[in-house]
Length: 416
Ligand code: RNT
Ligand code: ZN
Image 1 (cartoon, rainbow, N blue to C red):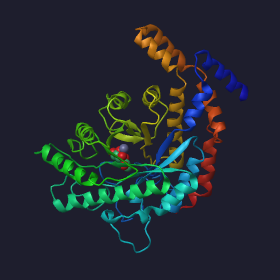
Image 2: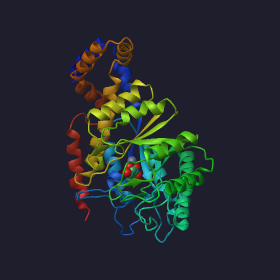
Image 3: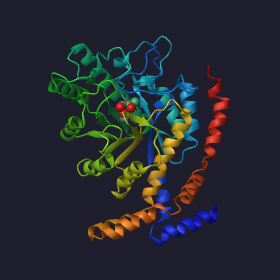
Image 4: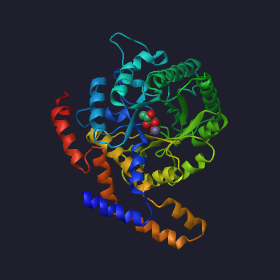
């Protein structure tokens, strides 16, 4: 193995690529792993409600985590098979409440996330956060912050406000900023009579939510092209949120690569935003037809996204988070596969002769650029990746799956 790594390294070094530096850089990049892959986005509220809000998990694979203990155990198992630095991305619906605590979404407090903070501290994870504007009876006709019913709108504004305070608290506890991402499902199935009104109300609601200045909270808003069942109109569209972020310093525009028209790519949007914003948060996922949330694979667009982050020297400005949920396969394996693929894509990007390629473009040497780009695709990348995994003390190859299968046998299959 060592010799395969050495010979692969030599191939990259012929192109002027510093492989050791790439490995060291990658080891410092945090990936924010979404907690919701572990339980089909259901959360701990157990009001017997199904997932709603234009998002859907398909499948009924056995062994879903049903509570904090199970979800954190599964997350830890997954994390042990993934190289690199990790953060855990939470949703407000994963509040951990004492029996009898009836605090609704608009009354959540830092104490409801103490268990998560402890878990993060014990394992050296950072935390990111999402208010949960779906799967709740106060989502009326698929509307939250844009509702014309003032009691509904106000309820969700209060939810946003208490979530930001929770984020500030977590940030202080961990000594690391918390990304607070607002995504709402609001939209209409068919052609609306009024497209502007809901957007004006959403703007007003966001202003109310973000009014309080808080230390350690990085606010962002996430657009979408359409939700399932809300095909005609989405209040929080790309233009809406980009305009909002551009006019509200401290609020960032989160790009989810499952949320655009199929010929639009966020790999091209990242550098556009980098020209104007100091931070660009991401939800990396894989869209397939109408679904926006398949497990991330090591495919072209993921590599292109990673390339834009690395080549623009933006590893500390682009906040990489994942967002997929698959209930048709082993959920722990889905976490591991998707996150390892993000890591892989970053490594792949770090192993490109970026300066040389930029030069070729600037000198209009497009033939050379094309040939070099193709050459890179067949270099012995796998040997470097396996070496990185070994350095990180995680399985280098698909042998990680055997560990997940064992875990399934010992733990997941015991869940009734
Ligand atoms: C939905 C958005 C949103 C959710 C999570 C659960 O389309 O992508 O980010 O997936 O908040
Ligand atoms: Zn998302």
